[in-house]
Length: 252
Image (cartoon, rainbow, N blue to C red; front, top):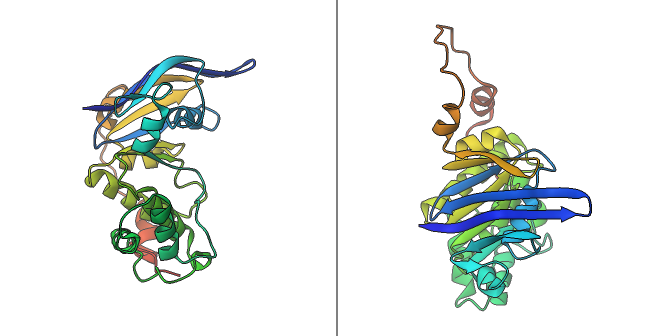
């Protein structure tokens, strides 16, 4: 089932044409990566879909609701996590979650907070101030906060910007968990490996247009068949890094 549908989306700022007719669809429970370099228009697409910005032309819907005509319904259906973790450093991790649950009038906010701390492997750190958290822990908490109220669609705008390699892996695992639980994820990223490891489908946004859209295997088939050569396989930098530091970082 199609959850997000975008057709002919255009947006300009005076003479700067940011989006020049963007089209794509996202299926329920999938991870869809919008891949592009800085300035490609990724964040503009997310801002339009989350009703924060009005498009100049085109149509877009989320959960069947038009983002322009039914903006209130769209906002009830989504959660948006920006490029920087929106957490209160003075509060503990659990207090951050409880606060958001109360603001959204969720029943039993304490239980909601405890369940999310467990889901994102933050239970032991739940009683500590967020100021003591590592970058990966803050981002995981931020994603956990975005799930309060069980929104069916989550927008993650460059979720691993500024994170170290190990923290990125922590966030990747959290994103995979979202889809595993049935959440539809639209992820924007400029990192090729991030799109490759996470996405069910990848759309490349370049100069305001989607130039290709498909599964990783479909995108690979756009290139000539690989030439088979027998070479000694060397460990990747990721293999070396994880062997030296371990698969998971100790909580700080």
